[in-house]
Image (cartoon, rainbow, N blue to C red; front, side, top):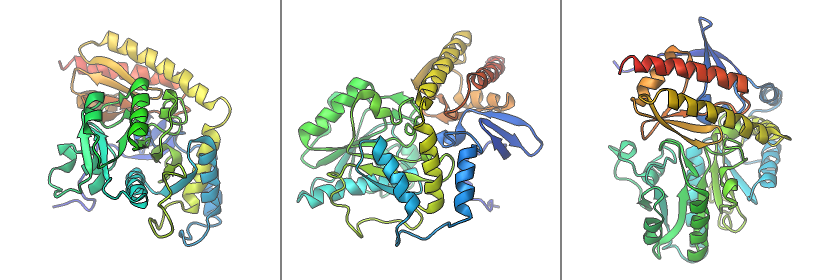
Length: 392
């Protein structure tokens, strides 16, 4: 008999009723150190006081009016994002996949508006993940996402990750844009080099393409910069964000330059819930914290401490782990043992991590985690690694 909740998830046998910072608590009071942060969503941990205050305060005043009317909190959050990024304008959504969908529509509308409707294809990279709508699984192209859901929307051309020659060869007169994650999350914490990001930006400029960055997982401070592309000193034309910007509240956005957004006029796109007063109140609070003095410097400092500890963990358990990869507090442990075995052993050690492709486990802790809490996580991962070794 089917579950009342559609069984599309292979859920861990865990249920949490309370959270505080990087900690989660079950009904019986057992505490788990959350090194996954809801898959990089709880950017400031659980029940952060500034976010709670913003949500409670707004909830007592107004929840929803729709985008038929001006929303002051939406305007305030857009102004913060424009101030701190390349963007001139922002469209708010409820999720990451809605943000990438908006980005693709913006690309197509840009070229149609320019009298080139035939330029409607977007190049993406193998191993990417841009969401679960039909268009976005088509964008990623992986069989594990697409099998059973055909026919898929057309318009995407896939090239091997990091293969610049294949990327350049894939550009045709129909190509409109290149879309990528600066660090692939689901694909196994695989980062584009700064040199490759610069080269991709140059290719877009040379061929008149738009550069679309999916910073849904890498954004809002996750790598130690507000957005990961800043490390390479480039800017996109369009950028999709979500996850960390809401700090746990459903919120996403599509950011763009005025030029890239030129075709998006009244009626060209819309949403009922996107950018509602509750979500944007929380988003403003997140931005205030993350852009505060010294916050991103602390992320980089703590990330260095985590990286050093993980390198030691790999060296101590060569039969379990192979290497460390990633940027900032978006880190992957490439495993020799099955990554699911390591994750399950982590549950027994009361530390939570997240699976990824290429036999990797992801560590995506809250950005305000302390070095002491990192040390506790490392100790629990050590216990998990020893448990896995005993089964090898």
